[in-house]
Length: 113
Image (cartoon, rainbow, N blue to C red):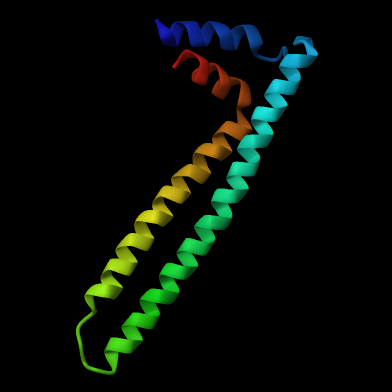
């Protein structure tokens, strides 16, 4: 039922953005701009988290390599935690890019859920 309603709304709005009232155009543009800003923020945080994870992993590996230790628990946890954060940020980045590229479909989906 939701899928049919979503398809009907998409058919109604598809290609008719120029016929929407000015308030609706502004709403769509603001939704799109917020998705773009969140994409940029998630991208910057993703690059920072990935760089920090790589740097800390190399730092701990070199620190324990001199003592002929195995890969230390701290460096393993750093890599695991940093990798998890990076995956979450990459997922958020991709979702925000999708919302920025298709704002009408995203608004409709948000309204129907």
